[in-house]
Image (cartoon, rainbow, N blue to C red; front, side, top):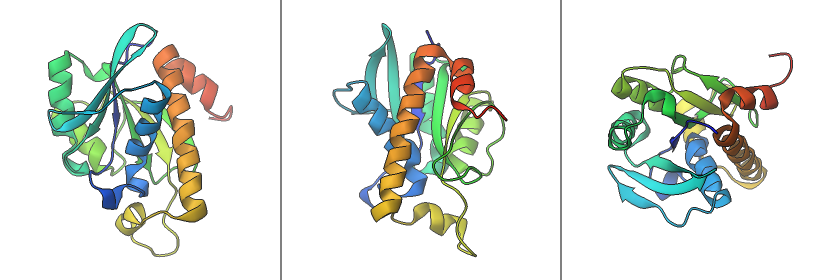
Length: 192
């Protein structure tokens, strides 16, 4: 059984961000919550929190409700309340450096310019937490990265995005049940 007690999905609160690439973490964790039978989200310590049970263990699913660049505040409060160390948490986030639809798992490392990861690393005092990276690809042409991650997804783009979110939820559930090493073995391509 995994030792992860807290799964954090990163995104921005508010309807205008709902169908954007930057909300990949929220979209995936909503799917995970549905898959695990979460009953409701409670507003708690600056985040929406749903508690589920996986293999007899209580897991908190967390969506920080501060904006992305201050996600670390609610995360650190919830970790403190639950007595969780950085290696007890799994963070799901969007990643520009990974092709759209690809999923990578990683333990620790830099923020890759991701403000949510930067904020969590700052507040926890360490980058040593596990991540599931939801690939969103690079912006086309000369499009600004901020415009790209916050652009509203429609049609086939939205369908592909939601299909990836469903896959990320499956990977997250497998990680909760079997640990990140087993998940990396199962979900990473052999050449990596």
